[in-house]
Length: 192
Image (cartoon, rainbow, N blue to C red):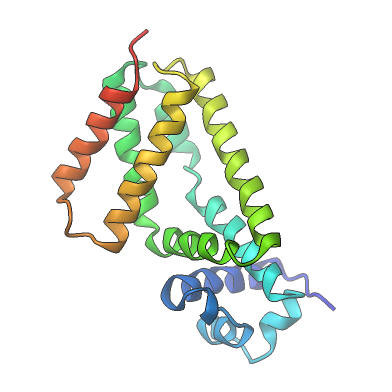
């Protein structure tokens, strides 16, 4: 029987994210999640039918937690529509994603695990493709300069910059990272 307490489930999924980031996919066990969440042994197995279910829900929860809050969205919608504004939005995005270090590292672990688990690969492929499509659609509706290709190239570029920041933080200083984000926008986004 799978339990339905939404708060407990969210706490368990958040604990799974922490375990993934710290111990990797091989360390993600029900027992490890129980310990991280500080709940009685056996609790996670009452909420998730399989480990694959736990992987899938952890990935979905990371994306959920990475979404900007309503105030951020409103501020972005009220901002200018030029490359300078675009660069500022991208610097803010990199900062927000990098601030959720364990979430992003957990996603990297899930991607690695997806190379060994076709079902997880299917779920992540669908989720990432939907994320790309949503970003392209949001960009098209925003009036910001650039096209769908620029959006995709920025996603790929900034994702690797975030990986660098989270795994080898001393490769680039904060100022260098901000300059790189600005340069990426300036070079990839054509002015209309």
